Length: 350
Image (cartoon, rainbow, N blue to C red):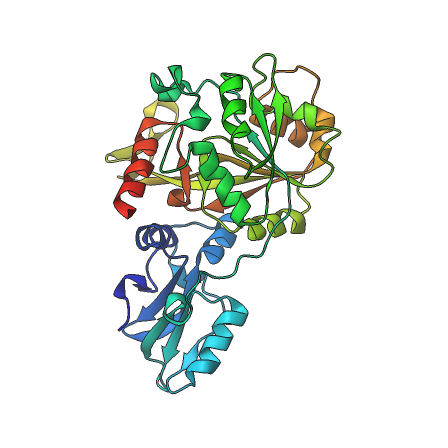
C-alpha cells in the first residue's frame, strides 16, 4: 500500500515540499499527476535550487531531475533491492507500462538497518564556554553542556551524532563552570576529548586560536547546543567540491506575515501590495566546516565571534559557502522552547 503522505502534486511549491518532508520525516517525495508518475523531489534537489537562488514558491515540477531511478511493475524484487542498496535510494517508485504509480518500496521494507553511513574522519570543535543565559535559572546550577535531554547530556547527544559518522576526536572549549565539565568527562572513558581553557570569555571563535598548531586538516565547529540532522559526508564533500574556506550550515526559516504588506516610495506612494506574504531566510545554525587557514585570522586572547571571523574572511576574498537544510533538521537546544520539545520527544519515544 502506497504511503499517501509522500505523494505530492507537481504544482506543490518547493517550500511546501520542504515542509512536508519535515512533517513526514522523509528526505524524498514522489511527484504524481492524477496517479501518473512524474518524478521525485529530494532534499538535495531543493538544496540545489536554494543555492541557485531559485524562487522557492515555484512548483517542484521546475526542479525535477531528467534522470530518475524507478522500477517497472513485475521487476524482480532482488534486482530492486540491489539497485536500492547500490544507489542508497530511500524509496523506489514502481510504475506500470502506462506510467501509473503502482507501488513505492521504502528502504525499511527491504533492509533491517539504516542506510550505510559513509564515515568521515575530521576533528570536531565544540564551543562550550558560554554561560547558557537563555536557559536560566537552570544554568545557575548546571553548565549548559551537562543539562540532560534523555539518558545523555546535551553535549553527549551532539558528540554521539558525530561519533556515529566516524568523527570521534573532540576539542571542547571551556570557561564557565569548566571544572564541573572536566570532572564529568574524567569519569567517562568513551570519549576522545582535549580541552581548550579560556581564561576569559573569548566569544564563539576566539578559542580557536589555541588550536593553530593542533589541527592541520578540515574540521567541524559547532555550538554546544546545536543538533543538525544531515549526512556529514554530503556536507564535507560539498565543502571540498566548492573549495570553501568555511561552509556554514544554514537552516531554511519561513516567516509568515498574517497581514497585507505595503511597499512604499517617496511621499508614501504605494509601489506594491502583498497579501499575507511568506518570507524565506537562511539562518545560521551554529554548525560549520572550516579549513585550518582560518587560524591565521585570529589573535591570542582576542574576543571574536564566528560571524565576525567569517566577515574577515569574506573581506579578504576568501570563499565562504552555505549548505542549506530544512528548518526541522536543525534543533537549537539552547532555548527553553526547543529544549522542552526535544525532551518531550525523547520521552514519547520511550
